[in-house]
Length: 119
Length: 107
Image (cartoon, rainbow over the protein chains, first blue to last red):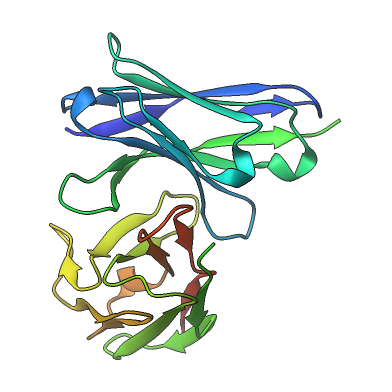
């Protein structure tokens, strides 16, 4: 079935970097954008950016542009989110999501990866 | 950035009730407005896209309306599995933004 499977929980110290992976299966990876969304505890989701897996084109939210890098490996059907210079308020669940091909919406989501930033 | 305002922030309802949630955007978004349902510890699920189109597999008791800046999500005949938090999202311009959520609780 169509699914996105993310890497596991991360605990990082302030100032460190984290990379979260998102492996796609059940569909052609290059045919659908991959988006990254985060959700801090008790907060609403926050869109971070997208990648076109086919062309590699990117679009980042301005808020994260200086600290985030989204990449992909088409040979393995995997997307990646790297966030550097972590701060305590980066503590959140990070989701990857597939962009639907019939609307600007997210039709398939990964299970989420908890990233905790703590001294 | 386009600001999203949902109301109410929470509501209490009973099985069988009709529930309406409102989402207002700070600028015109045409019909680039989606609705998601989220249960604790889970990723959001797409319910409605393009303001009024029902996502495949979603029960027909869910419906969406609106265009421009004012939108509604209606759940008719509320079922036990519908108690959750609902978010609207605009995808008219980046950064794509979400509302603050509406929690539907058991009365």
